[in-house]
Image (cartoon, rainbow over all chains, first blue to last red; front, side, top):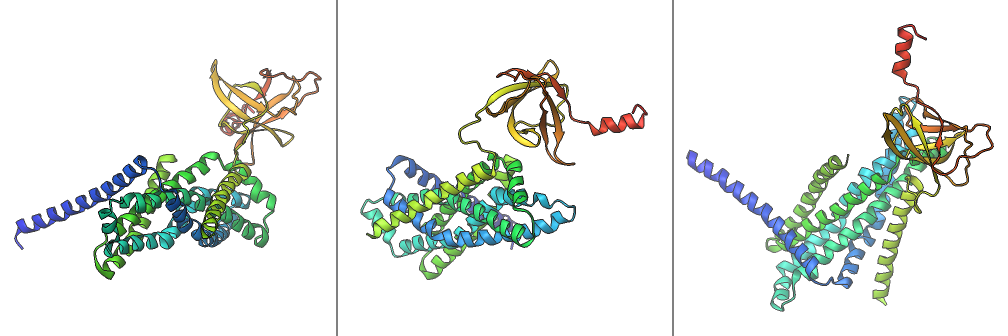
Length: 258
Length: 146
């Protein structure tokens, strides 16, 4: 390949990627435009809260309990080295409420509901249901995208709270019942170290993760390529991109608030 | 019928979420739902050495209030305390800033005196004692002033 060809290839890739980013952004802006300018479909939102939130409750509770338990085990091992076992409660609670609750519950929901969302919308696209809606002057954003975004923004903080609470109790089971710490130390020290600011930060994180996951998963489904393979690819990409964005965004939210 | 079940499930989900958030906030974090009920006292310290807003105020190790505000007043620290209404502080009480354990946070310990007159709202605790400054202590020891 000639040198000019190489340069052109680099330029083409860059332009394509930036256009792709713009496409993501435009999709979000369009969704937000319809979210704020048209009446919400309450019935659809309730259905989607049920799908994204209620049906993810069991898996969030299960993973939350075990995360709290292993956290207590690991933190106890580390704190034990300098005789700081009394700080086990605050360590577990702070880690769960500020960090693990929002992030891990968001990752779990991405795997369970986000993938289903992307493939559902993707199949609506390839079976031309979305085109049919447009022909009948039904706005697909209002009926499909907006309810998902609203439902995710409502459901994620709730699931994050479930995760943190059950994780704290899981840590209690390990710390107090198995490792022999006193229950008073575990819960009593927590109130000294936990502020409302920590809880607020967890809620902000969950809210933003809800928006990110519903945005990416709806986008990937809405603009899927054709065929069964296209929908499969869209689903995989939706989960991967959402998870990566959750972790990257998490770093920036934390660094802003600390 | 199916719709009613769906609505019920979502309703339960939201209520449980709000309850668990409220539970974490009130039980494990320092949130007082109905605001701080109590009366205010002030205390002037020459140095507060790391005392923070929201720090505990204790008598005999029992928490009776919190630090509401810290401001600078004539190059000294003016600390406003919120004390529970049920606790009366004698006017010859001493407020000391102490540290929980070796590395713990700073708090205010009040040693009640023997006076029968209790401090009124917005009055100030006259006797105060700044925290022990470890570096000061070491330099006194090193330079032989102790």
